[in-house]
Image (tube, rainbow, N blue to C red; front, side, top):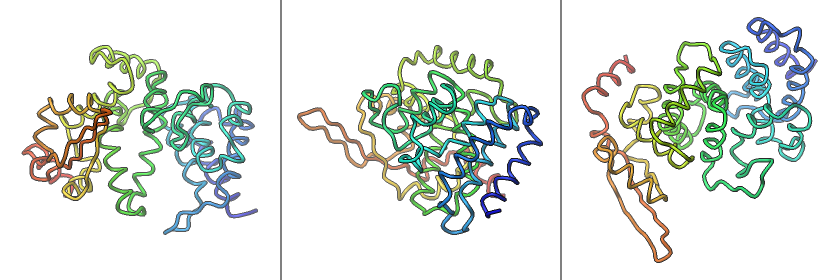
Length: 301
């Protein structure tokens, strides 16, 4: 038995203890696990040497702890397969060997492909737009990504500092607001309830597309900065330049005092072809308003 065989066996044993229908669904879970094991067989964490296959299997366990949705569990096992092994396991492979719902959940979190499988002519300029497109179709996409990001955050310190900061910002600006919308903290994930809450959020905010959703989530986080991943975000804020290329989004953000009062605009340019570019950074002192100071103090303590 190889090293990765032992890892798969161990994590499937853990999964058996949290997923009540494990015996019934064992054959399809095993099939997904073998695909993931093959896709990630040459991958190891650079600093720890841990086999990467442990990550998707651990995410699957985290999913099973909050829901008995087999589709989500399979998608968790397979969520990095296409991104890391496109030549052998394409999106077409996932679609043909599992079922539609597994495919679109995997597609929603596959960041290095800028289109979705059934419509390759629809190109997403930003990787988050592809993810948010699927979130607006099915909130389970957000749940899968949140579980993936929660596990990645536990190993954040092993990444290079620039990746730490980027992932920290994404978590703070996109994933935390989504988590609050669907009330995920310390609760079981109930698909219908989460979907209904998200639909109500879209209606309340009058959101019709991914651009408006991304803008709304960004605004939400500046209204309620919390301590989750905040330490890295806070202490690195003066050194990291951010860019906005969507003028409408920038105009909406700048109207929000929670954004406007916490950033320093470094430059704004717009050429004759209406290509817009705004460079800005967060000002540490301005971010740290009194209520956030308290949260940071609690976080550090």
